[in-house]
Amino acid sequence: MFGDYSLGDLAAIFAMQGFAGLILFSVFLLMALGLAIIFGQMGVINMAHGEFMILGAYVTWMTSNFFQAYLPALFSGYFFVAMILAFLASGALGMLVEWGLIRHLYKRPLDTLLATWGLSLILQQCYRSIFGAREVGVDLPQWMLGSFQVTDAIQIPINGVFVMCLTILITCAVAYVLYWSRWGRQVRAVVQNRVMAGAVGINTERVDRYTFALGCGVAGIAGSAFTMIGSTGPTSGQLYIVDTFLVVVFGGAASLVGTIASAFTISQAQSTLEFFLSGSMAKVLTLLAIVGILMLRPQGLFSLKVRK
Amino acid sequence: MLAISNLHVAYGQSEVLHGLNVAVSPGEIVAIMGRNGMGKTTLMKALMGIVPTKSGSVSMNGVEVTGLRSYERVAQGLAYVPQGRMIFSAMTVEENIETGLVASGGKAVPRDIYELFPVLLEMKARRGGNLSGGQQQQLAVARALATGPKVLLLDEPTEGIQPSIIREMARTLKRIRDERRLSIVVSEQVLSFALDVADRVLVIENGEIVRDDPRAGINETEVAKYLSI
Ligand SMILES: Nc1ncnc2c1ncn2[C@@H]1O[C@H](COP(=O)(O)OP(=O)(O)OP(=O)(O)O)[C@@H](O)[C@H]1O
Ligand SMILES: [Mg+2]
Image (tube, rainbow over all chains, first blue to last red; front, side, top):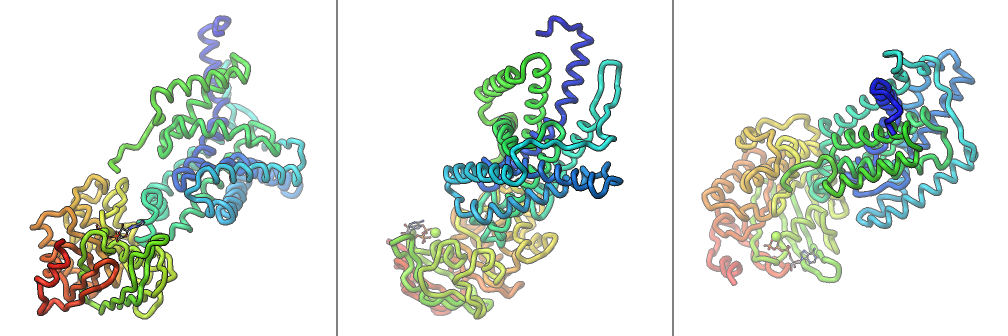
């Protein structure tokens, strides 16, 4: 498949597709981060995670419409506001869901799987009823549209770089919260021994609720990034949940570095292969490679080494 | 300080504690002796709200804590060093102690905790899981003290610890009591340790308190009879 290109061409193609894959990387990473936080904290596999992302995408869309209609002068900055709102909206919904549904199902993994799957269907229908079945697209402000011309053949999209920088920032913030803050200490204590965490004075239920909300909120931010690579419809989130599981499993649950490496590898493989092959072929090849690697390393790319 | 009255605790259908009555005064060290399976751990867990209470009541300084969750009991001044230590093994020594600060609202680990256990200061950046059993025991006590308790509960602190260290532990517990004016309830199978540390010795047998003797003038052979089979 590479036969028709010269070496220089190939290098340029790899570079361009690599940069084009940056937004996909961001979406994967933020989604996987949220999923991994929730799974690590309470052993809940959130099947509705894609719908939390789509809520963020709809919020971004509404924010952009609002700015276009009422604050056109500030339109160039709407994305920052949208991201914050997306985080808050998805986080608030997450908190509500944890309170109303998830907390009654702890220690029943199959039931949570079914319940969150049901929740994803309910949310999809809600989106359909509220926003309509048609997919919606978001207009980007002018400054995000262009690209940096690096060489004759290589262009880097500005929005890709921008979203990636934001994603890295958010990942660092999440890492800080989990590993260095007082709150993160409580989270990790609860993860390791829920009963004992309660007995040293930690309100484990509140920790659960806010952790679930944090994971969902981060998915909402992923939704903001998502609006740049796809149009938002009621079922768009579903397409991403499988990929996100892959990222988490491939990276090795409970490892932040692993999640980052895995999101990067998968998004880049997919994006590069898509140039040469059809989208579905690219996916098949990526999947096969991941399955192969996981057979050799079932614990994922990275795993934490501690004596339990 | 701590008052337990007519406490019944059951796992499902099987009742393990059949109506305990214990009152602990401020600054008092009470040892609860009993053989394996007599209900010592169950009592500790019930006091911490880890296993539910079937009937009866537990109160701290007159405040009823029977219906409260574990963390709320900690806020009322109960602290717990469980059997088997249960430290957070993947967190560092310092982080382990800091988990206790959530309840007391402190920011950094108080100096006096490290003064009590200098070895923990040396090892504060090590993961808790990589400490020796005796060091983990000190860590579990330090973590409990960080919550700023009024009553410290210790469940078989001497389990798996060599005799010379056990004697030192008795000294440390008395020092903690003297410095912090708190009450200590310790469950035990080693009589010599209990006699070393306690002001009062209770014996629990099949979920009931069968003896309650002040340390002074205790009949050691009578108590020892309950501990041998
Ligand atoms: N989770 C449980 N479910 C059912 N029964 C239990 C449970 N935990 C303990 N028991 C029973 O309760 C009784 C008291 O157990 P407990 O652990 O309180 O004893 P103990 O005095 O702490 O013993 P040891 O000295 O061995 O630690 C035992 O008969 C035990 O089998
Ligand atoms: Mg026990």
